[in-house]
Length: 325
Image (cartoon, rainbow, N blue to C red):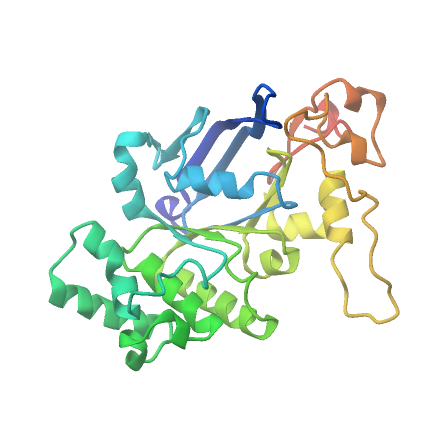
């Protein structure tokens, strides 16, 4: 593969996001730290799976990448160039989203062809005839018959609606697609069809995906690299095959242990993490995972973990330390 094909296309540099949240009518606002210094590099044509429990900051990160929100601090770079508020329209041409729920992400009052063509209208690309030609090509590309174009979302199944959402995302010919839980609202029987379609489109169009999910089985099926997020921080990142074969961070190990297996002799797995998730308004000192970690040491409670870089990725954990660099 050429150097250009493997070069970094998207980079997050120490991204933080803090909201001011009130917990009562008369209480003073307190900072909620949704993202705490996230750095991530995504190479061209990669599929980076971003995994973690609900509330860990995955969707906040997606909103920042799409220009829907600005980071409190840090930078977003595309092809090495920083993307600021003024470049939002340019960013939208290069990065497009596929959202979680096709039932709510499509306007029920617009026809399918109008929904798919909307990005071209917003960016003033082409005339009506050329836009309709582009819609025809996209319908064929995502496996939808031409007859649905004048129908409405309510007339389609969940899988068909998500294909419409995919067509709308791709009609601007973006380089990067942010997939935010794109199959979680679909029936299991339909999920594999959408995942296979995304995989085929990536190969055919040379796309780069950031695939956000809490479903590790889905991520293992599609991702080339995996980043594990906990309480607003990436605690481990590695090639997908390496991470699933030998997870290093205790949180990653717990996530993998929680995956159900088809063996009826095995009971529902216990992650030993407990039901309570830490409060992002008052995150734990030291390593943020230490209150739920069975392997926590004294240093974990007071000192942030070291950033230990290996051959294929990194892990932020006191269990490894400088000796494993």
